[in-house]
Structure formats: structure tokens, C-alpha cells
Length: 438
Image (cartoon, rainbow, N blue to C red; front, side):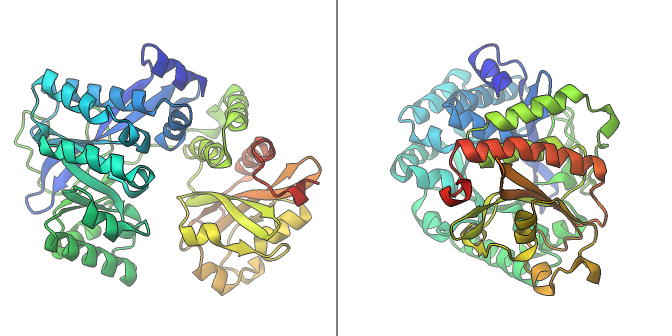
């Protein structure tokens, strides 16, 4: 994405840092913030971090992006724009692998005369696993200077318990996927309760991510969770514009968790044709199918309400998952659908778009087992568009929604347009088995 590279290489135009409040559950006071980088493309407008952060990492710009975020956070703290409390910044795998990372971080704090307790870091299990020894050394040095360390997305990896025992870590962040099911799924509720109990037994604090309802907040309070983040407390924003949190000059006391104020969807008719052309170009320029699909998802998000989606491709051992949103589990990535079977098989075999406006009705011919095992629970609408490489249908791109009749003709046409550059990415990066391409 040219705009991002220009921003990181030059005047940082289009980059900004917004803040998501962290709430102390017991007192209902704001206890701190998480810094979230944002990028606005000069033509496409706001681009999701799920799109531009992987691009920055692929093109060796992750450390520059991280330095920008930390510099902006320090400026905001120094300028009195953020209330007392820690501000957490996310650290990528490439930064943890950099031997100079801890030195740059601590030098920045020293120059600003800020105590380490004002700034924390958040790392994911995936980032740590990529360079474990280097990551442990860097995090130990930061903790020795008073910088707190949080293990993000806890529970989604295979080795979370192992890393919890071996990492210098103060806080566990429960992944939002478990919080989303807290009040509707006994399994999720048991996992959340178990993580909180285990964390407290090992001397760790617990932050729950993705809190969106009063019921979730009250359930977490009953389980003894320490802190919470989520849209229930406001959208990420610049200081002074953070919803639901008192300004730094006030007492910071919250009378009750405020509700999310929804942003209006962009009018489909107002979308300039040039943006669609630029979208096809950006998708086609992506370095792999996961990045390309993330670009598609970000472009569609303002236009239509959907729950998730994926790209599935045909290989020698059947139809496999190539990219997914939300990110797929290891089990889903390892699964295979026999060629010709299921809805995906019928789309690839026929090479025709398939739209199921309501899969709960008998006419949809979707098995009860398929609905039970759906990666996005309670799916109602399903839209799948075939992906071609040359004259061969090699896969599909699909969206699903919890709403019936979610995808009109305009969205079907837009997704079909995205399928063309997705096929180009698959062909260029050899992500389709050779026998399908022949």
C-alpha cells in the first residue's frame, strides 16, 4: 500500500494513535488505556490495522511503525492529554527480535523523564513464539525498569499455559472470543472463570477484552475479573474524545458503563467508482492471500453488516481454508472438505455464485451439523463467489451474517469484483495446488 509506505518513510501523514480505555471493574474507574495505531489513506480513507499492520511487517516497516506509536504515546502523556494510569502499547514479533528494541524503548522513557510504570507493553503468544529467547530477554529488561507486560489474546494458542510459566508477565488479557460467549455459552463461561482463577493463583492480573454488554460486564465482576476493555466503555479515540470516560481533569468516576454509540454505515451509492478500482489494485498487489482478503474485509465493513468470511481453495487433498476473518483456529486451518462436497464444493464444481439468504429454512439444504459447526455461530445468510485462475475455478470467497437476507445484489457484485484480483494473488504466489492449475 503506497500511502502507508510513504507515510512511514516521510512525514507520517495519515498515521495517528487512538486510545481504548481500560476500566477497573470493582471501582468502575478508568485505570489506563491501550494505544491503537490508525492510518487514513489519502484516497481510500480509514484502513483497518488488520490490513496495514501486516503490510508494514511484510515490508520491513514494523519497527518504524512501533517507534511512531511509542513516540506519540510519550508526547500525549507528557502533554497531560492522558490521565494517570498506564498506557499499553502493542509490540510485534519483529520488534521483539530486534536486539536494540529494549534500549530504544528505555531511552525514550528516560528522555521524557517518564517512569516505566506509565507505559506497558502487550505481546501475543504468536509474537513471542517467533523469537522466544530474544523476546524473554527484552521483556525482562523492560520489567526491571518498571514497565508492565501483558500477554494478549490469552487462550487462543496451543502453548498459552507454557508461556505463562516462562514469560516475565504481569497481566493476562482474555481473548474477546471467549468474552463474546460468556453469557450464551457454558463452555466459554467455564474457560473465562478458569483463566481468572488460574491467573490470580499465579499472581497475575486479568483484563477481559471485547466487553460490549452490561451482562458481560456484570458476569466478569461476579467472577472477580480485575479490568475490562470494549465498546461498552467507548470507541477508541484521540484524548478528549474517548466515549464513556471522563476527561483527565475530572474525577474519572463512571456512574455506570455507557452503551456503545453505533456509527452509521456509509451509503453504498456514495462510494466513488475510483475507490473500487483502487481496491482491486490493492488486493492484486497483496503479498499473500491472507493480506489480500483482509483488504477486502476492511473495504466491505462500512458497507454491510457481516459476521465473518473466508477464502477457500481447492488442492490435491480437498478444499482447504486459505484465509479467514475472524482468524481461524488451527483445527479449522487443518480441516479439508472433499472436492465436490458441501456448499463450497458445489460452488467450485459449478463455478457459479451461491447465495443462501436464510440457511435455517429447509430450502437452503444446509445440514444441522453444518449449522452447529459453523465458525461464526448462528449464521443466517451465506454468500459465496467462485475464484478463477484462467478457466479453472480454484476456490471461493465467502461472507456470512447472523441476519437473514444480509447481502443484496450490490454486495454480491462487489464481492464478485474482488474475486478476480484474489485469483491473481492465488496464482502469483502459488497458493493453489499445481494439479488445479494445469
